[in-house]
Image (cartoon, rainbow, N blue to C red; front, side):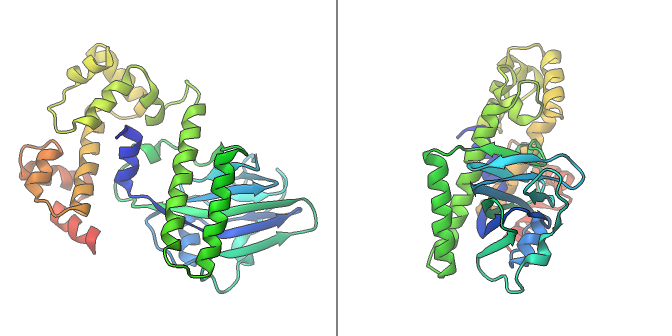
Length: 318
């Protein structure tokens, strides 16, 4: 399993699509935050990443008071911090609150029509959700807005038609359609993330860039492949092909935290995931996560999350 896949599995992503927006120029709306939007549709999540797949026409997207970018057909817009954002027919149009245009009854997916009689734009709108109680360097390395071109080829065509079909099935309360939408939303995110990684400039910083760095990438992969090993900065530096000081400086500069702090936080994610998903003992989890005793894990867990593994497990399963 590669590092990105491990990081995604640790946050337990889920998702859905709940709205097809048919927009005609002139239009300009400001969405609610991701959490508020999901709450309006009856979903409660700790952290929400809204997304829009442009299936027809184009729109300008961004944040109030900031420059907007154009998203054309085959583009996915993602908002990893869950911020409210603007969707408009032009880069200057003044937005109105989208909540004022939503029907009173928000049960099930909807088709929403807005705007005038001009050029048509169609979006499929949805969300990805995850637990936010744990640090995840992948999500934290993403920008406030991602604009990813998945093109107009087979991937984009299959994705848009599949989401449209799943929306129709959910409207008809077909068995399994919610799960289908969740998987499609996750696939859309993974494909968007893959495309985003391929276009990141080398001057960027963050974990995503570090994973592609010829020095840091191998060292991070080793930490993820064997988190229970007795890693030291010098042994990680050896995998990176750098001196101890050069490795530590490069890691801090690119990832934003020290190598062993990164390792500790990743071990905490692993422990939290095992507590959530298994009935294994705290000692067994501690050993796999790189701690020599259950007491050592309990101390580290309390420092990271402010609670004990047992209490966290009860909360995660409740």
